[in-house]
Length: 316
Image (cartoon, rainbow, N blue to C red; front, side, top):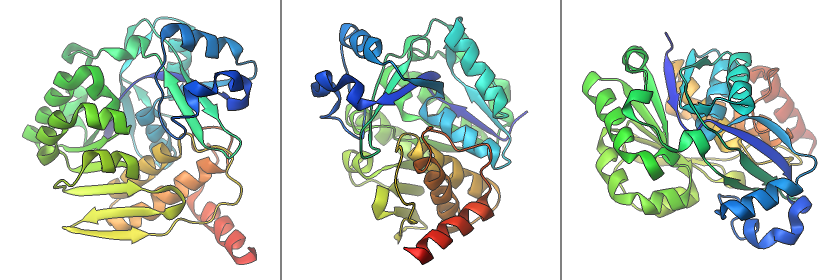
């Protein structure tokens, strides 16, 4: 089986320049850097105006698992995809990255990622098949053999009961759990549920806006990404800060946080200290920031990339 099982929305991401839909800027500019919601009609209009979109297997946890697989961690993805072209593409790309498919099948819909001139993104998705996850959609036999279960906070929106069962399942068996907060809106709308789950979750990951929505809480381990301001780590009862590496011109912020999560969790699974794992996560995030795609490249090599960043720092 696999060492880590990621559980999240199985989404085919379509990435394009935000300028392609500049006439609809009111939909996506107000939520720059996060997730925006639209009606199905507005979603169809935006999708229809994208002429140069690039599609790839996405979703927060799926992106993290790609990074983990590249770093040598045995990973599987549990979610739900459509019985259609996009679903087949999702499964094929997981396989290409060496991530085992533990997917259920239903109908599907894509997520749109609009990249602004400064590399920041706005996202909008219609969940399709991945919207509702029931306990019977989970491979509990595989989950019982995992060392880590990594759950996407987006699942709380429609599947809080299933998330609760997953966390209780892992907690009762001594399996470590990690949860990504996903989005401030998700946090605010599911705060009572999160407050119930937090004592049983080993690792919480998110950005500063998501932690701001969560408020002051008790954690076992928590990692807060702050973009160019670096990363804050809560470990053994104390917060510590890490500066961000210089990366030059940012091409696309989409997926950088996912890559960080994948690198950080990989570091922990390799026996690194949380502080060492933060540094590995930052290298993975930097690799994505310099790419037009929202995933860590197949050719990513930790030492070589670290040397390249160091060289760039020295010449700036």
